[in-house]
Length: 105
Image (spheres, rainbow, N blue to C red):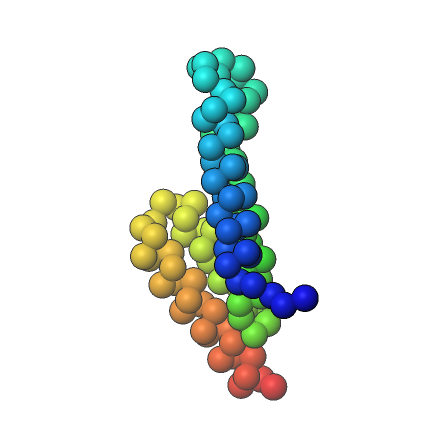
């Protein structure tokens, strides 16, 4: 069987469209359930965290440098520093830890 890329693209487009269109057509009234409202409120944050966290741990050459960068980012974000400051400091810490690991080895 020969693979046809247009079939794959069509199926992906249909699935994406259905996922977005079905809630609009099936739920026409205001959502009043507090549990459902809070669930829908936190879904984007949970999804972003689930996609980002593995990338943080496996984007560097070692777990130690990834954990140091992640810890730095958490501390700076908790102290309400800007996104640019958090990202730059985390990158500098990762670079320093990896440089130290190479010097030791």
